[in-house]
Length: 551
Image (cartoon, rainbow, N blue to C red; front, side, top):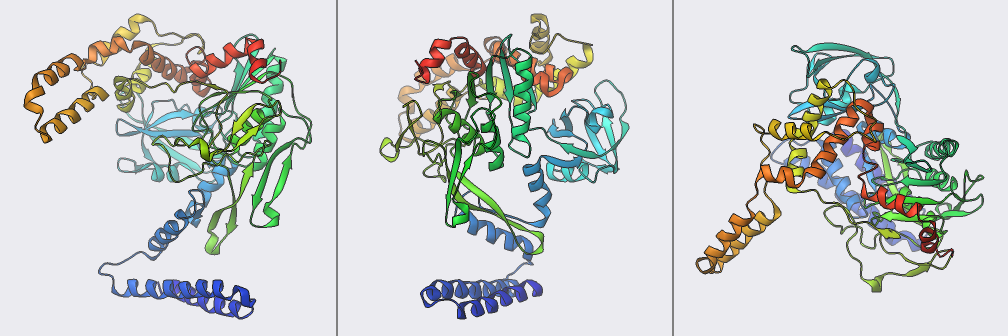
């Protein structure tokens, strides 16, 4: 604490020295800085001396810094030294570990996916394996952060896991050597049918553009004459990689994005640096409210140049650029330095980035606050918070019973049991759970806890509460009780009514057991409404051209 206080005092003294050499016009502003630094240092000292309980200086300072930065925008953040590794993983896609994703299932830390050719796969770990110990340390009371730190480590370092597996009576040990794990930006690409290729892009870390370009070339060699680029749920990443991914589909020299900031060095135009892999192939980009930042640059370039059609839902609305600045003691500041603008001149930053819907999407923006722009072919588009798709597909909502089954991890556990009872299944894109297996699933649930409340039941409870408060309940009691009886959910009947959506999730989970992430993705091809809409559009060339004003 004494050291922290000394640092604060030194900062104050240095600030006074700097102030002495500043032009008179800057004096007021810099005096305010020095004044408030002095107040902060003395406040910190007084809290340390007199607060009733012991305080942790580092934690208290981080809370103060986080609160200060939160008043600016959601993306300007302080990164302490302890979190630097996680930040580097986010930007480079690389870390030292075993290449497995672990989550709590039924209260136990469980392998939910592992990467192809990773140490986890080489050691024989399977989805559904429960990790009880890491290097002799019990995981019973460990949270996900603790487990991540235990699993990750230097490349070639050894790690010992105690595993409990569905088909074994006793736990057993697995020995692994950590390796440098590189998370692919493109976890999957393949053919949906004989002439439509599909590329799933989940991040914009280093080499994203190269991965997309390579995937497109391979798919064309396999016969792809049309393409779907899936950017749903992609949170963005490196600005340079947004330029490189866009350049896969647009010609060299085209403006991709421009940035405007306080300093001249942050105001620049980024152009496609190389020849496109293919700037003619019919293209559909899938978006949703999880498509943000770099994903929105690529989507915006495709839309503004009428290079392809956006299908799905409105994007997130993040049009701010961040840079990292080094701070003392190996910490860093990720600070917003500019806004970016896509080729039509639009900034897709949400006008009020502090107010969003519960799902993170941009709230409705009044038309009077939007500005009209045009694409290369004269189509009208707007700014003010995300990109509107050219074809809107309504978000699919699962039934309450389906949410309950997922929340209780029952679909996950059933898929694990199915895997150990069936040696093989059909290709992921063709696999369909037989009706008799679904009937077994229904009976398997008999002794499982997955109760739930429907929205109708919740609203009826609210109605009863309000009716009682306003003294109307006795008069409408009979009608409400009749409604309750008519709408009371029945788990057995709901399992039949919502069989289609429940079955689809079971099939996806089972496919992942046999074919990993590739299987989980391919199993959705004939069920995903966004993909089906994109396929229908690409098969109707006249409609595709008319949407882009090319006819």
